[in-house]
Image 1 (spheres, helix red, strand yellow):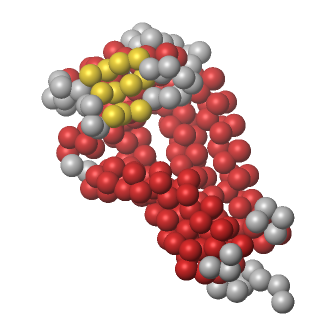
Image 2 (image 1 turned 180 degrees about the horizontal axis):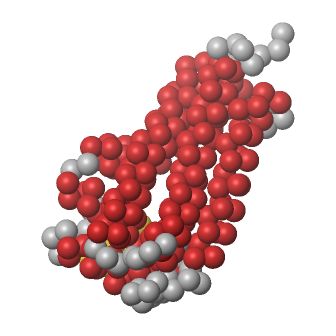
Length: 229
């Protein structure tokens, strides 16, 4: 599969965009994690204050390990922040914490794209791991039906990356609005948050572009466009 030039035609845009997005995320975060906010409150304090202001007292804020491993767990109602976000009073920490709090607010309000994404998580995880093997196995065995099953499963995984886009964009939008309306950020501090969250958003765009590119490649192969006589 990887030796076929057609594969790289579809895969390379997502790969390059992903590398660029990751570089931007690290650069933006590393720059603004060194810039202290005027209020001097940590990411954990930002998350707690915003949660309380929205009446989400039942959502806990905990520290987790890893670099930018921050996430909201809707099942446990827990907002988990990485060490550099949890205990750091920086612009980057404030932005990331507020973004994850945005997911908690989406959950509380029944935001439809978040519900849809949560519903397809098991199928997407299963499909992303198994689909390429089914596809290649179907091709090698000349078993077209098996290959199409792989395509369908990978399609679910690709759909997941597309559904993720409005979820992440909306969480960032809510974060920026709440940080300003709550008075946690002042002056040009929100511009730093913009750069950190906008860079992070690019990683989700890159994931969607990559997944859709691979899906199109699979379809092209099975429908005969990628075959050589």
